[in-house]
Figure 1 (cartoon, rainbow, N blue to C red):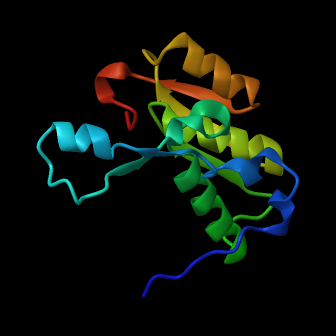
Figure 2 (figure 1 turned 30 degrees about the vertical axis):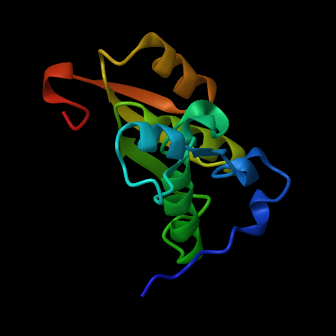
Length: 136
């Protein structure tokens, strides 16, 4: 059974309330031009328009909110993730807003912009061997 998670009250009035509030793009004309049955509507969410620019912001916020709700994430805990970018950026933003420490393991060859962004949000960046991937 699918269960929904209400937005936590602490998000009200913060930038986190805008996560997931991204444009819905109608791609039906493009789909028809590609030979898709005309009666089919094709839509896409512009997840790159989330605060912080991460396409993984909605998933990251959901993980944090669920962990808060069931007591696994409390103010004394640190969010730790291995990421090559998008989820880490989202977790760094969420941690900055909610007051959590965030430690991210990223391959050393991740772009300078991604490194700078997570550091700007206050996350601790731990670089891993790029030949080992983000889990190295």
